[in-house]
Image (cartoon, rainbow, N blue to C red):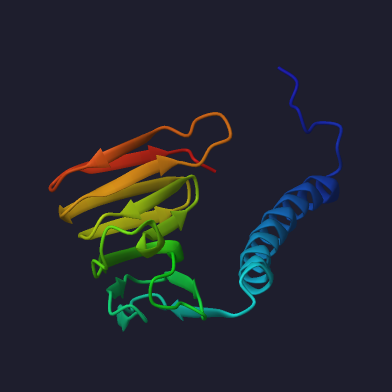
Amino acid sequence: PPRFHQGIPQRFRKGRVLTRLAVAACTVIVVSVGFYVSNSFLHPDAVTYRTAYGENGTYLLPDSSVITLNSNSTLVHRSDWQSGSLREVWLEGEAFFDVKHLGPSAKSRFIVHTAGMDVEVLGTRFNVFNRADKVNVVLNAGKVKVKLTSSTDTSAVVMMPDELSTLGNCC
């Protein structure tokens, strides 16, 4: 049977492999730079918490909520959080949240934004995993409302303790 590369000189076949590797490397760099730039421009007055590979970090937010970032994770929030205002954070990676309940006011809501899903906290403790094409939420105590952020599906579910909500292939 004829070989696919039979008529192609060896140097061109190697060049194709190198080209594919270069394209893959450039894609990773562009996505990383895009995430950094979007955080910088969309949240110019943002506070960013980051952990490196093999490192965990526990941080106290301005509202006295406590977050624990797992390895290689980033959490961003606006620097102008004020008492009684909407509390929003953006997560890339994994974090455990112990959110301080500030009352039933819509202004005191706490929302975790991830790729493909928003998690609205109703005073609780929970974990959010947001890596690659998978997002999951595990609720330890209290309640959270998980809402899809797709343009075609914005359904929501209220979770109870010990429940797991998973979204795959979101990106």
